[in-house]
Image 1 (spheres, rainbow, N blue to C red):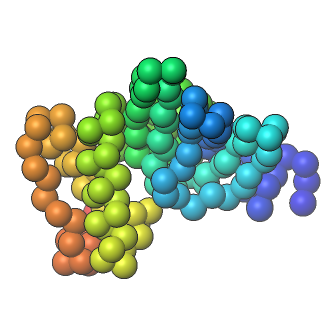
Image 2 (spheres, helix red, strand yellow):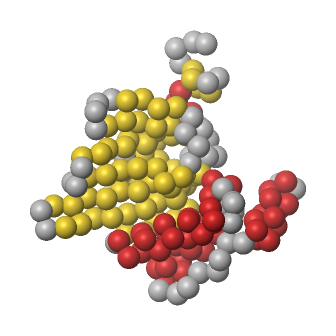
Length: 164
């Protein structure tokens, strides 16, 4: 394997996410996603990488002496070389944003939806991208979202298999 590749994929084709953990101050973590590579930079910082088309959830939280200052979750699709993308802090180069919410009440709604998907023995990485778009839009509108069910998942997998 040459120095420019990792697991057979060119290094520049991967999407890197910087994760930070400073207890009670700053936390960046991956809620779900298939990590292709991980580099530990310091005791508190590491970089994880995703292959093109991988879907992952990236959570950011920060606090000060008086409590939570910022919380956010983004569900992103890692892009391939030459694809358009949206810049997201700590994500290089960026990704296709499927869901983006801020504020702990909204973030906790998304985390609860992820838990509900996993409780049905479904992998959030394989969830239909349209579900994340729907969920983000419904949360933004203050409306309940449709549940992601095994039936919806089966329909998505059939649609995906036919290339639609």
